[in-house]
Image 1 (cartoon, rainbow, N blue to C red):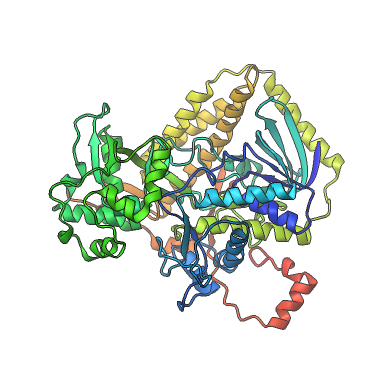
Image 2: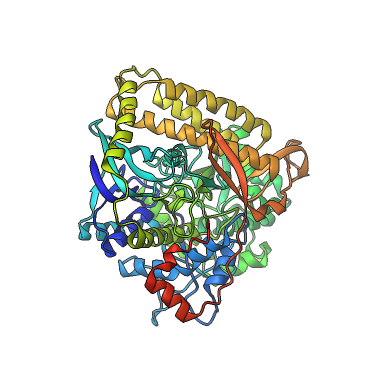
Length: 639
């Protein structure tokens, strides 16, 4: 048994930052347990110009934490106090990354310029290029190593341990993925930074090496917010990457083929009156990249048409940057499209030449992974990209119902229906700052006895040993494929009551089968993936139950649309079934809360959204609260 003050599970940008900040505040009995420093989403994903969202810091355009918080919560189903914390700490978190060497661009005067991103009324967005989150991870890893912080790689978290009353976290059990050995860690605090549910979907832009671990938190009893709210967008599938921004704005040809790559045709043309209208929609898809029910009709029809071509017609869809069609006329495009390309100095004779002028690293990225855009087309699909929901935390990022557990990064559900692009990277860093500060101020003492912990851990190990005595019967690969295909069919951006109800019936049966199967005879690799399947399947139960609740009580919104027989038709050329259930907008005033019920199944309810606090603090009072430590006793989220 290993004893720590703080155990950090996960090594993405959020987990790494938490370790660094704890160490900087003299909390040194810590360790990072991770499947691998190079296996997370943060270090393996990006886009054409991966965005980091922060408070405005350029020129004369005014900004403030309250203004940013209101924009973060404008999409609905967001607690305003959490949004205010994310806004208030964004300059500190951003400049911490700059101080570590993350190359965010500034001008000759040291001002960090910005640009508008989706759902952003100002110019708060910044970027290092396609690899912003990777640059963040590399700089944070360097600091972790400089500080000598312990990092245990090849460790899969099997179970979070809680006290017998299920009121607090006390540690975790890990599988050594190389040896098959079990390791037990006692910890006063657990920072849970396992990322989004990357392994839930078949059509996914999450890196294949990242599956996520939210099911472990849900199984431990941690409550969650807004699990039904996810983002989906166009992405390449040979090499998983978001084709947002400039990949769309340079106006590539959308081409479909049969499964053998033959019978090529520009399938979007059947839905648009003119080529100019089609290409204006493609351009807007760059600005409005994630699928949005609010952009139907609008640019998100591109996602629907792609879905029909790939899922319903069984064809393959490609982006072709090599040539323009003969009937593309620059002068016929609308003012927004023409002005953007002209001001960017990026109007050339082919999409590839335009992309070279607008964002040359976006071309090099695919060349590096064996996809030369000057020689071949890029295969795409509509893929799961981000979960706006996650485990529920208070204003210090501590779980609302499991003390000493701090979910940070994408596994934390602070976002709502929509969010400005890049705000997730900021939220992860802010969560790292808040959790580490609170732990340093309040949770440095050991408050759970070794004897009580050993009793709980021993009971868990008995169950593990019993399962290891039962031979494994199920093929983990087939089980993974089954659960992923189920989620992509029922829980992606096109949803219906009948599909979700059928999926729930399937997932409960699969979970019963997985939990009845043993561990005996498995190699460490197979055991690792079998355990991943269990937590993914448990998570899928919660996600699908929340999606069903969303269909019944809310309708189409955010990153998903609900089909129903008596809904609104969205395009005259689509089949009769393409009618959408309208959103009940009054539900944006509530956050969906889901937790483990007494029978182990999800229990779902609602919290009224707390508004963005109106702050008019008197300095002397704030100073006194800070000096005495009372600031850490004021949990305004859950008094």
